[in-house]
Length: 253
Image 1 (cartoon, rainbow, N blue to C red):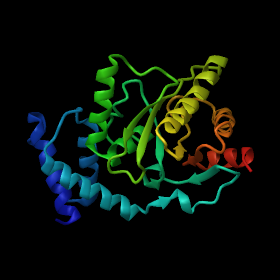
Image 2 (image 1 turned 90 degrees about the vertical axis):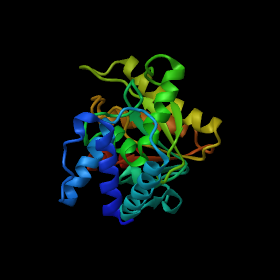
Image 3 (image 1 turned 180 degrees about the vertical axis):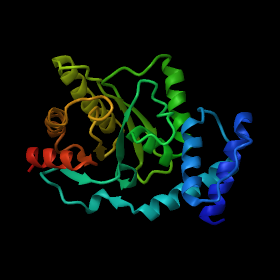
Image 4 (image 1 turned 135 degrees about the vertical axis):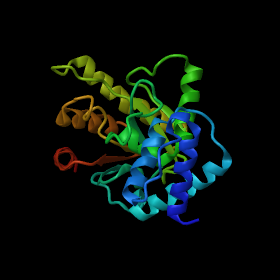
C-alpha cells in the first residue's frame, strides 16, 4: 500500500467505528486527509482495534516519522557532561525515553489537532498508547497526581519508552509548592528510568505551556534536578521555542 492508500484505509475504518461519523466523506485533498485522520485518532476512546488496522497504522506512522527525519541522540554533542540540549520535534528523537507532559487523566489530549505535546505524542505513537495508558489508570483507580511518573512503551515513536508526568498548573504567582511539584516531576521520571535500566531521557519543558509555569524558573528547576542524576542517566532537554533554547543555553555549559 502507498501512504495515500494507508491513510484512506485508516480514515474509513475510523469513520465506520462511530455511527455519527459514517456520513463524513473522505476528502480528496491530502492536507485535509491528514487533518481528518489526526482528528479521528485524537477523539477515539481507549478501546481495542483490529490487527489489520494496527498493521496499516504502524506502517503509515513509521514512514511519516521517517520522512520528517529521525534524530539519534547518540549523534548529539553534550552541552555539559551527561546533559544535552536539542531543539526540535520530540516525536522524532531516538533515545531511551521521552517525557510527555500529560494531564491528570493520562490518556492523552482529546482536542482534535491540538498543538500540545500530549496530543503530538499520542498521535505519532498510535492508538495503542491511549489504550496502554487507560489500562494503567484503570488499575490505579484514580486520576494521576501531580509530580509522579508512569512508563509505557513508545509503540511507533523512535524512542523506546514514554514517561508520562503531570506537572503543576500555576494560577497567579509561583508558590514553593509549585516549585517542589515540578522538581518532583523530573525526579520521578529519572528515578523510574533508572529502575527500568533506561539510559537516556529527553524532557520537554514540563508545565510551561498550557500550565503557565514561567519558562526561566522551570528551566532552572529542570537543570538542578537533572544534575543530581549525572553519571547515571543521560538527559536531553528538548526545546521547541527559541526562548527556551536561549534560557537553557544560559543555564548550561
